[in-house]
Length: 72
Image 1 (cartoon, rainbow, N blue to C red):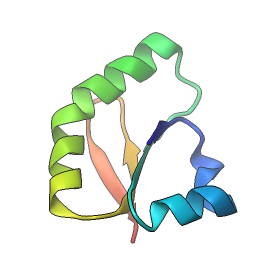
Image 2 (cartoon, rainbow, N blue to C red; image 1 turned 180 degrees about the vertical axis):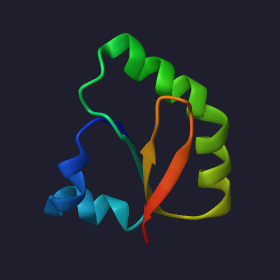
Image 3 (tube, helix red, strand yellow; image 1 turned 90 degrees about the vertical axis):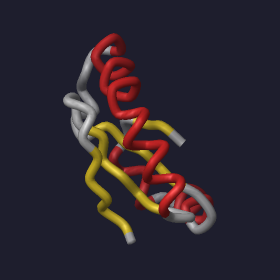
Image 4 (cartoon, one colour; image 1 turned 45 degrees about the vertical axis):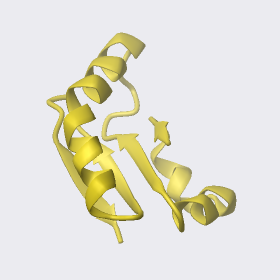
């Protein structure tokens, strides 16, 4: 799941989904859509590696393509 809503990790339904997958959230949820898309596209190789390494996680995506795992 890709999102710019950082509060998503506090919602019950999304937390249930997180038990079996990944959520990638923009670190800055106020980016215009063009910058948000650029951040996710730049981070795509790191996202693919994260998914291959672990079965679940909550990740922040930064505009330079960097990922930081915030859960678990």
